[in-house]
Image (cartoon, rainbow, N blue to C red):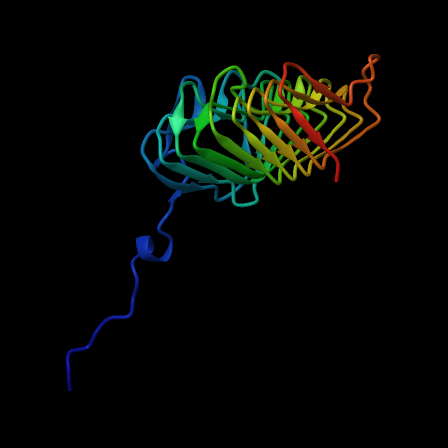
Length: 230
């Protein structure tokens, strides 16, 4: 008979990702947890915020953060749920709930990445804010932003926002910079609907019952935009 080959797998082989924890991603004075190395990270349970801190800071490139269906739950005096202090390439954030943070639910500066499947509710800043004042390329898809104090979803220049839903945000539901695409999204009962810069494509969106006295539905700033119905 030949040699016996073990079929047992190591823990890394079974789950090749890194759990968010005080051991694997220790925090600092301003963050509960901090990702400092490239890799794939995931939550193993809900996280409750602490006053004066962000929930999870991302300080590395080539990172995937999977909330795994769990919730980042803030409270009064917390900062942002997920935070990035500088530009980072190739970052993906997905699949979970971010609620009740004092700052934004997500406050990032992602270039060449994605934010997908996030529900951001009742945060003190934006629901999702990806540095709208600079030129980045980020895909925000399948997200919801509800009842956030500054606005719903904010993308940089050259953003693609697709299949998102915003409601009752105290600002624009969706706000993008120049050369962006907003497609297949719904804004309902936000103070403003969709706001864009120049040279954008706004295609197949629905804006209902904005609460702005000026009645902004799709509010286009700049030139060269193309607005298309369904």
